[in-house]
Image 1 (cartoon, rainbow, N blue to C red):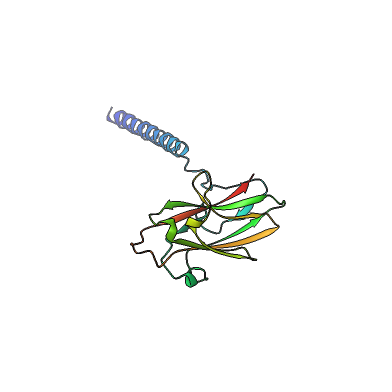
Image 2: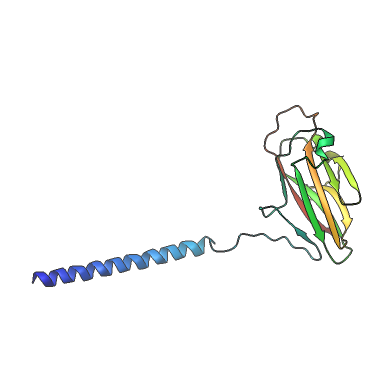
Length: 177
């Protein structure tokens, strides 16, 4: 009689363990699929006839923590607040480079940029550039050619007297319709 009870207890424990494992697998599967853990997290920005290469690890073109420096250094290759974009396309549509402040307390009067498209260099302040309907600052407009390599440097003028906290800008390439 004691052997029968032991066998029955072993079978009961086996069923309980199996049931717990099944419940655990179902809960884990529900959690994975309901939270999109398996889906790729790449946000591809596409527009008709415009493509660009983003060599940064984020899924947005972004310039982080621009520093206070003299104009000569800001416009040079020594500036770490730099972004290089390769724009390619097959037609002559117009596009714009638009800068959006993400987290910034610096007045645009003190934020400067230098943009080089391989032919021309533009040096200016953000405050002197036109604004878009959605609050961005349009810093460049051009037609799509076969290949456009654009280098954008940003820095804060040495005239700015306050402390510089985290500041970053998002750069978007928009097709002008």
